[in-house]
Amino acid sequence: MTDRNLALLQRARQLIPGGVNSPVRAFKAVGGTPRFVQRAQGAYFWDANGQRYIDYIGSWGPMILGHGHPAVLEAVQRAALDGFSFGAPTEREIELAEEIVKLLPSIEMLRLVSSGTEAGMSTIRLARGATGRSKIIKFEGCYHGHADALLVKAGSGLATFGHPTSAGVPPEVVQHTLVLEYNNLPQLEAAFAEHGPAIACLMIEPIAGNMNFVRASVPFMRRCRELCSQHGALLAFDEVMSGFRVALGGAQSLYAQHIPGFEPDLTVLGKVIGGGMPLAAFGGKRAVMEQLAPLGAVYQAGTLSGNPVATACGLATLKELQRPGFFEALGARTRSLVQGLSAAANAAGVPFCTDSEGGMFGFFLLDQLPQNYAAVLRTDSARFNHFFHAMLDRGVYFAPALYEAGFVSAAHTEADVQATVEAARAVWAGAHTPS
Image 1: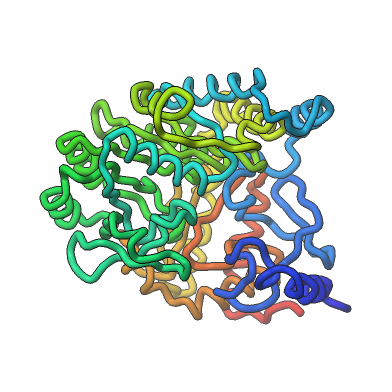
Image 2: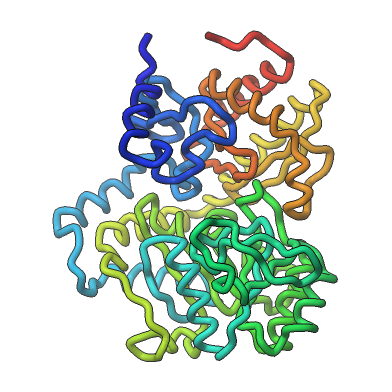
């Protein structure tokens, strides 16, 4: 049979760099041919060959209800009939903002944008404008979008400035970016001791989904909050992945359970709040957010910001998440998956560790959970690549890179989970891969 995925890839490569519009989709990390998706429904998608897969990427997080949820489809169809885009305010933008503010107490005002990168970039500009400072802190392994100032790797010493990780980013653009090791308290304290009065913000993924799934420890997060407050810097939570995915109140609500009065100053949101459409947001306390134009001197704008169809999709999604027992059921299903995978790996003598929260999970082919990016890099990439392709052959689609988190939706059934676990058991037992 002709592989239409390969044919489409060859066709795409003539017009699109690498044949894809976002690098990880190219399968470069794992090898092989990327699957071109034709359609999706519930917990599954079908590729160009008509092959069905159990989908554990869910558009990299947004599809928390599964693909094609009836209530979301209905809302989007109604909105589309009224118009695709107006370049003017709509009532639904207010409704979505009200819903987010209701669910995340740290946010008093917010601005809607179209992508997580846009939201992260704007958050840094706002923090610098509100504080009058230039320096920012980020952590190695955390991804906050492809804005120039954030495409940096760690320097060679403690609390050193970063170096560009992309061509086209001049060194002087990242000279104010401090890159520290995730969960490293001494580095954190050294950075504030040396640069505290010049730091505008500390940006962090509370659960880092771009080094698979790594949590910031409670003591580390407590110290982040204390040092920001002590030095007048803003604590910015990047919850593009974790927002409304790990809990109804986001990851910040989980830390608030362990740290009395805990709140970030700014929050970056995306993915789930758009329900699968291009939509993101950043928000925080009123005094900071009022520094944005047209009220303040920090400029930010976007033609498609607050798009009426995207806001309908996001609003309908957030309404469904608030149904009684939603996150309890989602979390239980996710734990069933990772516990099943862990048991199958242990039975086969495969080094394996895993963690999950809500509908987000990660696993590592390691004996213990890593706490930072350097530890993540010790994962056996060759073994992961074999596992990825063997599972793909069995109709299970995990992220095509060992540094990416996975996602379970409300549409995944226990039968889907058991089918996934049995497939993994067969792979680790060395069973013959189906043709």
